Length: 470
Image (cartoon, rainbow, N blue to C red; front, top):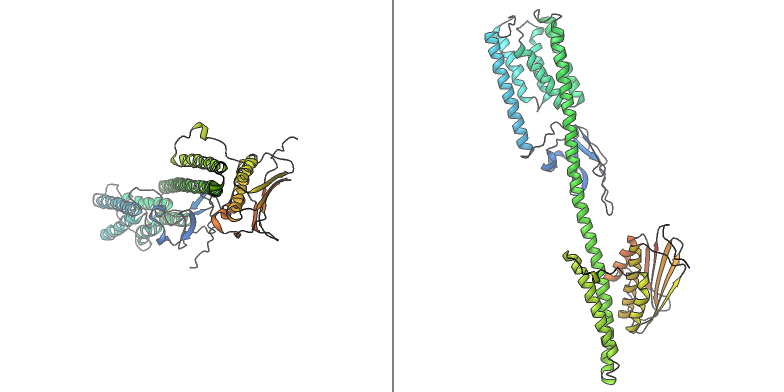
C-alpha cells in the first residue's frame, strides 16, 4: 500500500504542526504527536505511550482535534501489552464458563429444549459457538462468523437441537462484541450475520420458528447492538479527551521551555550590551588617565572618576540581572525601569566623557513607543557607539532618531577609519539584528562611502502609538 505523504510545519514562538493525512483503519501507519511535532509513522514505530490508544487514532492541527476508530481505548497503567493479555484472559474465562454451562444444559436439558439430530453433532457445534468467544475482542467479526456458522450452518442440512445457552446467548455476545469493538462497516456486517442466523433457525427448527420467538430473538439483538455502539462512542470520546489533555500538557511544557530559552537569550543580549559598553568606556578612560598621569596628575583624576562611575554602573546592572536569574527579590532601588530613547542624551554624554564626539538629534514628533521598541532603540545606539569607541577612536559620531508615520528610524554614523565589522559578523551585530527582527524591522550595517561606518534601523509600530503634545 502506498504510504501517505506528510508535511510538517513549525512556527516561531508558539509551535504549530499539521499532519496532512488522517489515516483510515487499513492504513499502515497512524498520526502521532511526539517531541513537539505531529507526524505519521508506521504503527510498529509508534511510541508505547501512544500505542495504548490503538492503531486507528489520528490527529490533525495543533493539538485541537482527535479523530479515529480505536479498537480498544481503555488506558492501563501497566501498558498496552499487559492490557491486551488481561483482556484475552478475561475473554477466555467468559468463553470457558459459557461453554461449561452450555454443555451442562445439553446434558441436563435445563431450558427444556426439543431434541433434534445426533447428540455428538450438537455438542461439537455448541463447543465451536461458545469457544469462539475467546477472541471476541481480538477478532470480533471473525467471532461472529464462527458462531453463526456453528449455530446456523448445520441447520441447512439437518435439524439439530437449539438451546438458549449454547446457541442464542453466544450469538448475542458475539453481536455485542462486534458492535462494541469493530468499526461501523464491520459492526453492521456482523449484526446482519447474526440476524440471518436467527432467521435460519426459525425457518429450519420447528420448536424455534414460532411467532412468540420473534421478539424473543430480535429485541435482545437490537438492545446489545445499541449498547455496544453507545459504549464504543463513549470510550472513543474519553480516549480523545485523554489524548488531547496529554498533548496540551506537552505543549504547555514546550511553551515553558521556549519561554525560558527566550528569556535567557534576552538576558544574554542585555549582559552583552552592558558589559561591552561599560568595559569599552573603562578601557578608554583608563588609557587616557595613563597618558595624563606623568604630565598632569590632577587632570588624570577626571578619567579615573569616569572609570569608577562606569564600573559601579556595570556592577549594579549585573547585580540586578543576576538577581533575576537567581529568582531572589531585588532591592527597591535596583528596580529602575529599562532604559529607552529618553535616556539617549545621557548615553551620548557618557560617551562624550569617554573621548568620542557625539551629535544627537531628534526629528519628527516624538511618540510614546512600545516598551520593547523603546529598549531596543537604546540598546542599538549603545552597541553602535561602543563599536565606534573600540574600532574608531578619535572619530566623530552622529545619532539621529527620526519619528516617521507608522515607524521609527535610527541612524548612527561615524567618520572613523577603524576596522569595519561586516553585517552578520560578531555577537554585537547579531544581537542588533535579532532585536530589530523581533519587532518586524530592518537593519543595515556596513562601511560608508568616503569612510566610516553606518548603522541604520527601521522599526514599525502600531497605529495606537500616541504623539507627545507640542
